[in-house]
Image (cartoon, rainbow, N blue to C red; front, side, top):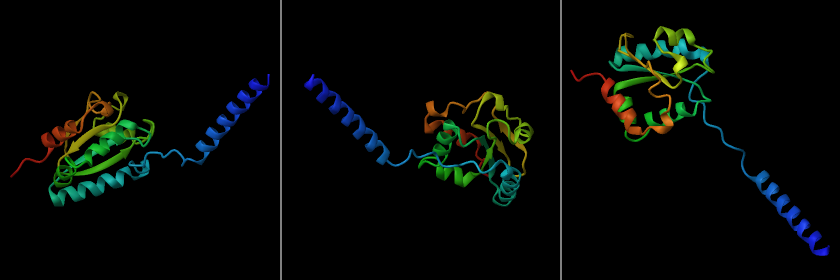
Length: 163
């Protein structure tokens, strides 16, 4: 019986030590907000179109939400070493926050983005605001299973042709 009590005390002490160690760890870090508040979308798009008109770049509208892991993967691929120069030289990127598919639905509809297919969803506009491309089938909805090269291919196919 004495050995059983020692074993129980040891197990209790080990469990308490684990709990204390876990409490001392830094808090779980959340992903950064890459999508501004939904109320910013109209102004952000207008500013991007103004910039695109003067720089002759195309505009990428990235529809998604801060809760969306695939949206964060897409953003990291946009900004990795292979894609950042291509993105910055050819596009103005606008993150459009759709919250939980209940914000900026009118903007998504205007650019023919079927939010029911999932996010992230992309639209590409020319430097005058004309819609060139919009995702129809959730092509980037599962970014976590895709490679950065898929984004490279997308950027290459939609960059402005050399004049």
